[in-house]
Image 1 (cartoon, rainbow, N blue to C red):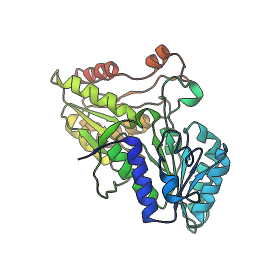
Image 2: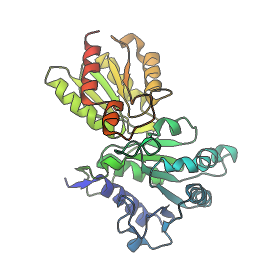
Image 3: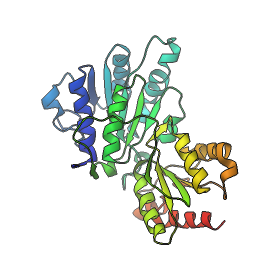
Image 4: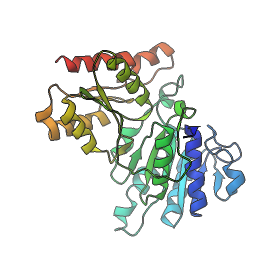
Length: 325
């Protein structure tokens, strides 16, 4: 199977859907003439023209509102944010318009729109440019939230998001746009709301999502050398998330930890831990543990960045602690 970059998988997904459906368009800062801040939209202006690949002013609230209105009137916009940190300015349109419109209109208006862009920390970008927004948007009824970690998942899930009739928040990462992975040549679409078992195991269930999956897999390999078999589950979709896959794994391993690149309070890991104790309490041989970013604004200093984020050693230590409780 061919190997391509994460950014190219996203590009293929959007291009294929734009060829398939003339109602699909993309809007955002630098998506057209500059081919995207991270070159995700490379070549799309030349193929689809300026009416479907649209450069916008630096005005997230404004162009997001245009996208929501377009979606209500028969188009399928893709709104690219240079970073989800900038999308805070557009939160009113995402949360109060897109997410609520179907309910508030009594089912008269679907909002088939995808909001996508870079999420989470990406190096020395400091506190206001390094936030992870999975829990922020997963809190809102009416939104679907997706955060794929591999090129294969990114392409299949973005195609599904574009075809979906509900608003979808699609969280990527600047740090994995250059990551490579196997992606089939032919057409495929992945189901929204279905997790993927990236590595099978029998001793500990390790649930995660987004780019920190790489930390989970590295830790699982190291633990395997010590005869601790870790099952790594990549949620891929945060809302709705695949409760059944996680519960079935916990019933097999009897232990679980959740690894998350975000703050601990009101987090995705909190929800996962609650559902496990509700659905699989009698199967647990140890408490559900979680490992998150420190409960602080993100720093600029490399040493403080390293201290704030979970690492392979932290995951190994926690998994071993679960084994010997």
